[in-house]
Image (cartoon, rainbow over all chains, first blue to last red):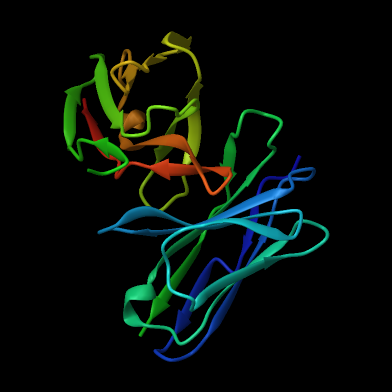
Length: 113
Length: 113
């Protein structure tokens, strides 16, 4: 089985722009979670989607949003980028039937200049 | 109090020694616990999951769980330089009707020859 695929791997944006990141989960996994990882804050939970519905959300401003498609692929959007949004964004997919184990993609490294 | 706490390290051990990594968590009803390994610049990789009190062994790795003390640990026997990485403790916590995975800040392990 192919693993979790995230695109693009690297992005450079400027303040005020918006960005969309993509995540394709492991085949058969319907849950996709997004995380932000920074040196200062560690891995922070953004949100989780399951069957096209957001069912859990972390403490991030409304500039961070996401969606999930019928094929379980998910996108995450960040609008009005700030310097502090520079981070590694990780996507993880989970098969809820296997005791909540999450598998991570390689991540998207976002740099905001 | 943080939901999942780990000593940030670095924990330095000689090659061949036992490395002991510790984690405490705040939610008494948590049922699923995970250890992930993250090499610099890479995404987290699951190395152990544990759900019941006691020890669980997998090769050189042993996870230990004590729910009464809200404590989970990871022992790495015969440590190798290739084990040098950041180890993330993750705990499933129930929020908003669903589980979400909360990560500790990670412990950096350095195994020196």
